[in-house]
Image 1 (spheres, rainbow, N blue to C red):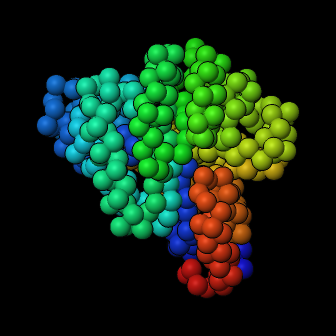
Image 2: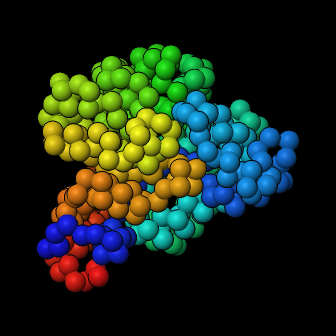
Image 3: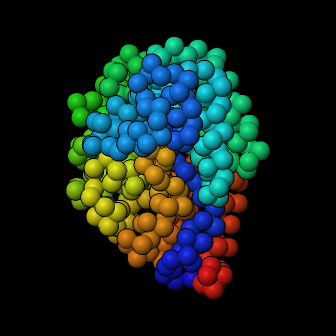
Length: 348
């Protein structure tokens, strides 16, 4: 079994690992060329139409600035063709990093508010998902509430999700800013979603303290936590997450780029792992943050000195925490196990 890998050997091992992505936003997955093309077609949206200016646009001052940019990009996505383009672009990127399965966050309320028809949204998701399967990537959907838009957004997201129930919809989420957006107000919508068979996967503890994570667990019945970064500040919460095997969708590069941590080495992921918390690695909004799924594994391994076996365990965590069927999980676990049997020389 390979031990600690460095340089090209580490990158080769991380790339070859069969991977699962549990926290990636559809709009946030739009590549810079895609955003540039959309911006040039729709200059009134205010998104830069010059390549250099767009790169500067994606330099975030803080989390609030990131959300402003994110919503501006969302406003560029107007019809089924745009949705299809985003889905297929994401699928190609995932395939390039040997990601076999991804649960993709979609925010229907924002698209419908911007004038897209529900039929266009669903058609774009369906055709894009079919193309992803041809690329060897299985996609599932999480429909999430933009929390800053309040209980009306919660109600309309729930109604849309349960009425349309597209193939591949597995979970119900809550995103957007956490400050001033209490989790408890969305409890009725999560209760109904869970009763209808959708899994609860709200964001919590990305920009606020452990209390937000506790609320997501108690009020929203969270089965996984999006980010959960601040759990490291609460020993009782770390113990609870570990004891109940509640996975965290950790997005290290995202947390650095939005100013939540200064660098990967300072990220509390090591403390989470040391306390037995189920950690998964994810990209969040990859092109916006200059992230890739392989890159997340490499960055964390380099910063924390993880062995190949520990990286493989992180990949297995993502499989275990996913909402895939048990048969598919078993296949992926087997492939990951095979990776750990290779000699270090195989990756040099």
